[in-house]
Length: 330
Ligand SMILES: Cc1cc2nc3c(=O)[nH]c(=O)nc-3n(C[C@H](O)[C@H](O)[C@H](O)COP(=O)(O)OP(=O)(O)OC[C@H]3O[C@@H](n4cnc5c(N)ncnc54)[C@H](O)[C@@H]3O)c2cc1C
Image (cartoon, rainbow, N blue to C red; front, side):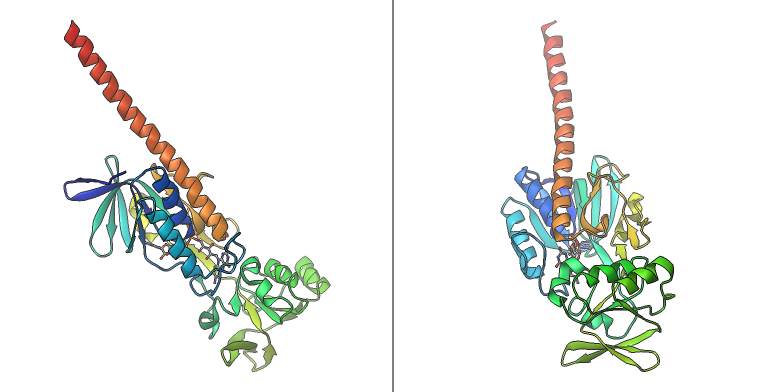
């Protein structure tokens, strides 16, 4: 499971770009399959602002940094190299890829697993960025239990905002919908909110009110302050994939209108031979468990692909030897 060195370029069976749940899970599987693996990670996992990972079986409540530290240790235990760095670009070459890092270094890879996650584009409201992952939230499964029965606001900002309000209503009877810069809901959506007792507050939200490091309210443009203890927002989600452009892989608009992602087959394989994707870079709504599962599944596919290639090479060499022996006997 050694990486090969040639012409000053160390080449790995697989270079994993991104060392979050998806990338490390892939590296663990590939290491256990005795593949040489390099994980290059820029160290900015999406859930870094949160104090705990919730809903991940057996690790519910674990600090996100501690979870990844344990993941790195497990992957390293099977020989994977995990380094800090940021990939600037990757290009296809004979037999694989060369991967350039921002620090100027370069490595080779027979296959690529891209697990670089996404960027949450937060609404431009003063206070939102500072409170993100604490009392400014997005996901009822990640943080909903923690704000159950509290005064929750939902800041409209995307096609799924009404759905989000209905989801948070499952967790608290006190939910308000701030239409903010969107038109107030009408028709069936207005009826749904009214039926579930969710008050709609018109008008742009100007800022958040924070006292002693806690959200206490939402200030509207006209100066009114509405008391709230948590605010759900709908960031636009953009796959972190700029470095893939030279490979011809570009993010596409998601059909749900919630952001941009790298499309792939169910196995994680992309349109570019030899390149797999896993986690939030391709599945914008994947939680930690789903991201880890996708990384493991993609790794299994990559290993099978390499086994097929190794076998094909071995068969060619075997035939050549056999033909040479036969020719020698003649
Ligand atoms: C505030 C918040 C709280 C959340 N809480 C929960 C929760 O409680 N439970 C849950 O299941 N999910 C939660 N999530 C969702 C969770 O963050 C994602 O499911 C998970 O991070 C996806 O894993 P990933 O490996 O796809 O991406 P990430 O965890 O984002 O990891 C991607 C890694 O790739 C690196 N990277 C990016 N570009 C490059 C590059 N060019 N070169 C090298 N490295 C690069 C990044 O720095 C990062 O370390 C939360 C999300 C947010 C925003």
